[in-house]
Length: 183
Image (cartoon, rainbow, N blue to C red; front, side, top):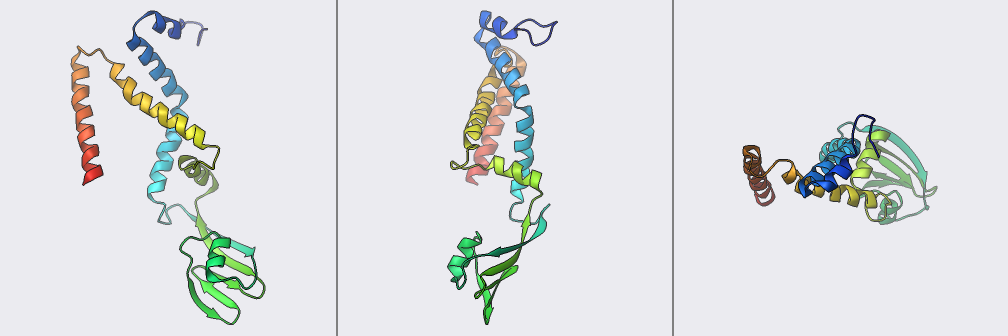
């Protein structure tokens, strides 16, 4: 199996050579394979930092009919609003942040702020839960990243100065991570 005409089968070559060669080859091709999804995870990770702000979000007007004469807790649950709180009531109209609910008709009108569709899909992929079929992909991706961490130590021969310098950078990264976690 050749990847292109002028190239030998590197997977077969790696199996003939050392374990280190195999790690480098798998690291390389898995990296190429996952380059697109790594870009998506990087961008969506940065976007998720701003999830509690209105950064890049667009307003969307929603009209929804729910059960008439619902309590405040029921309204919040049916409209899927976390931290739902009634501001005031005037007759049959219940006012809440960014919207209203009519008790007699069950009609709720409110405004939400959402990311554009593509960005929303990207962040949904990033934070998939076990109820979502995407979580298998997230497990695969997480394990792949863990493989990248481990296999990177086979990218250079241990006797080289580059490898020793790499170990110092690794130690620095571990110390920085511990400081960020426990500070």
